[in-house]
Image (cartoon, rainbow, N blue to C red; front, side, top):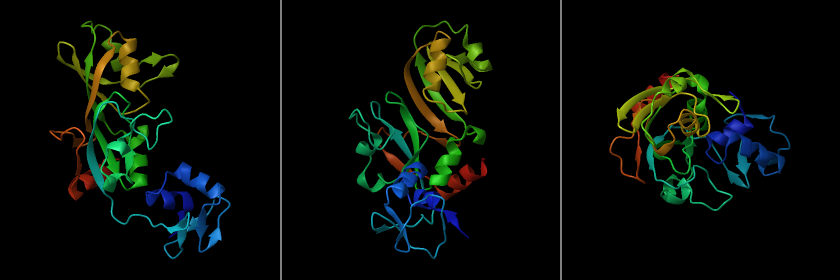
Length: 232
């Protein structure tokens, strides 16, 4: 069985597919001692792949972790503006993991991390239908236009899929989405007169944040991981 070189590198958790292709173009990737000059290349388990001289191999066991993302952190490896990232906060042993879906700078709550690049990709695809659940604290108490968001809103020419929205307090909403566009919840709620003051993700698919403390990480059971894989 062969695997495209970009996916092979991504599954080793060294880099994303896109970054892996950039590495190849820059002459940083070798297969059996030969420098690659194209990402259109397939390798097998018997090939020796190196990145910057280091042998890399895909992870044989899928691991998934739940992480309680703190406020004022970027979901990225490095921020051009120098802001603190989740990888600045994570213990060193977990800094090689890939995040599954982003949470913006001010949003807190559940962020999943994994060593499986393909799983991360599938779980973020809108076509996978994975539900992300948020609690939103909003300004104002006029919820008369929320049905627009429930039906699917178009804001500045961008269409957003219908949201499930339940009122759970005077100024709190429970929101479920499957699309996951950038700042989706904030943009849509602002457009219907309910600007978000606080946003907190409480679940991603079948994984719930529960009482995991801020900044802490825990490994998910194999049973939970199997349930995730069967859900799409």
